[in-house]
Length: 155
Image (cartoon, rainbow, N blue to C red; front, side):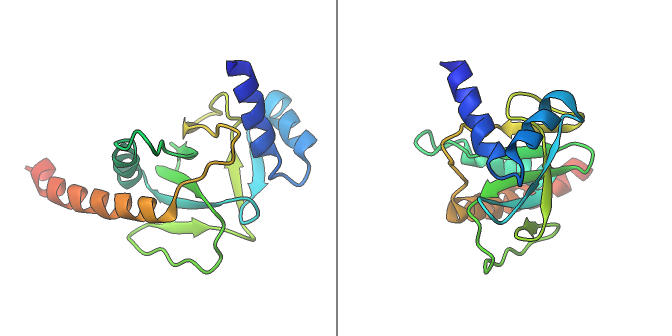
């Protein structure tokens, strides 16, 4: 069963590539990462690491809505939430960036990390993505929590 889900996740993620076969070869034999175009099957909302980890923790509170694919870039200190493509969406916040059509995202395979790039929540192959409204709410709540904690952590 696990192997079947892993294969589904690989196929789903590789389908975003311009050449899915090459993408899978890069994961298995190349650098371990593949550059995939954003904006076709998904966009990525990239946020600072502390904010992203806090928001992901908040999203995990709802057992009926498990979090969707979420990528951590340890080298850049960023968390990327995969959400439906929406070129007209506006996301605001300190350090918040939407990665959409015309941009590329480096991703490891769903079954392992590559260097400091790894999945906090790997894709499951169903095409599930973060709900933008739920993600926005979690980011707002996380921003408030971090604002309260910042003065305490400086003491």
